[in-house]
Length: 595
Ligand code: GTP
Image (cartoon, rainbow, N blue to C red; front, side):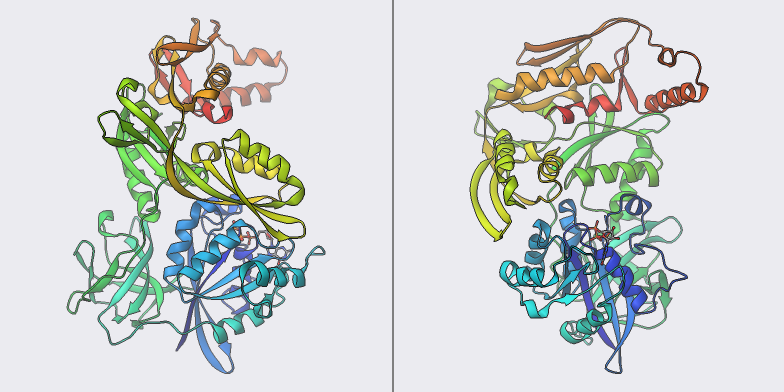
């Protein structure tokens, strides 16, 4: 059997998932009757948001020059937060299809993902997609592929994932140009775990690729990292549903495995599976653990208990090992988990998946970055929670993470984007020409200044045409201070933030204003204060009054009144009482709107 293993990579929205659908249809794995859009985006959340969050694998058959080929492909997410998913997918493949939108051309993640594929030593087929659109410029884009990406324009395949045009040529090119799987069938088994999912009935389902050797149903396998052994009870392929097979899996095969694995800790993404009777000498290199970029706390609220939250987090972690979690406690909020994420979108998605899949209600604190603290004693520590900052008199320097950012944008927006970078304490590093009307700007920026709303600002200034990719670089010292927030005279540790000295007053005032909007009036007056080093830099008051929410409705409209009450009830579920003051979820995130 001929096998080709490849993944689809692209900048966000350039049409990967739609092209994957077309390839499923083009190979008969899905027809008009069974067809559903974005078949591989199987999570509700992915369909609702129209984005790919998790890489997903699928096997299809294609006949090329009279021979049968099994094509195993992995659709990957495009957003910068999910780079880690892309790296994992690449490690299981020999080829990559690089999709480029014929109306947009090369964008920031096109470049970033291409570099990753080249680093992983993959063969690349550039695909110019959406050629059905009137504003498509296929020839210009092919030229750009050559000039900017260094791939040959002649190698480009032109497709419309919408109409199906060019998809057959693409499938043929995959068989023709991508190499056969590397690996030796006769060697001891080495299979790479590239993903996993927890199933309440069957235990952990492992997604894997056999790199060397053979695996059969009934084999006793060993996880090389922890040494635990299991019997394989089911082997199968994604077509695209999980379909069991009796055939052995040989080097190059991609699929899933069930082995009655009930303990989540036994499965590690990136671990190597081998045979217990004839183990491989060495594990495969696996993956580099991704470093979290932003941290926040989750606390159980409503009917959810701490143990429920722990269960939900542990289960989700099997499916997404790229977030970290550690127990923590807050004076104000009690026991919870400090979690680390690859970016803000990742954080949002995990919080939403916990609530949906784990059925828990939680309160989340504002995200922060990691800070490096150089103590006077010479010791260097890292903190991921402003509340953990040691006594300022013991601190020599507070350092923050910096990123190297590459911004691709229309030439006419350069002035405005430079101004924005300036406001965000950015340092200009250079400028490159991309095409007549597009440039690449290089900046060094503090991570804390870009994680919240920088993308939104970039998009709105460039009318959607600006894109950015970034990599975390080193820590840099700056004039950073901790700002504490007092609610009704009591310091709320979960509201503390680390800010730049020059922006402290403005942010303090903005934060209190926002808190004043979010916290309902109580029976008593609630003073709010922002404090730096014991000195009050801003204050506000929430006046006393029993707030009658329905009073706003001036009688009349009953449905509106009911809606308002329901909204208030819902808000209450995600609320924490601190002292005698009820603080809603929104208040903990208030700091995000004050950048
Ligand atoms: P992420 O997974 O979020 O990174 O996005 P993606 O690259 O998978 O893009 P997706 O397939 O979700 O497509 C983005 C949008 O482009 C959708 O609205 C598609 O319907 C549309 N689209 C994709 N391919 C084509 C095409 O060939 N022609 C036209 N006209 N629209 C297309």
